[in-house]
Image (cartoon, rainbow, N blue to C red):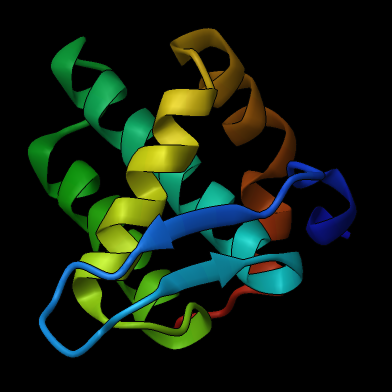
Length: 114
């Protein structure tokens, strides 16, 4: 299960909107969903920028990323974006592409968007 492969540490982000005081903490399934979303988004942009996929294919992958965030991660949009930044900053490009290769299929099964 992706959740077992997720960062052991919790992902903490400060609330970005007025009225969202305190911190939003993601762990378990939500942290796994964030890592999946990060791997999908990063890979989509990387593949399109090198001509390996079309802009339409990239847009489909980014749509799936957004749906994972909407359907499987709690919090407001600013908190989700901040959490993605935390995940992105903890992984370099090679690690993120490796995450995609290893977990993309599992991500789509674990976090369906239909």
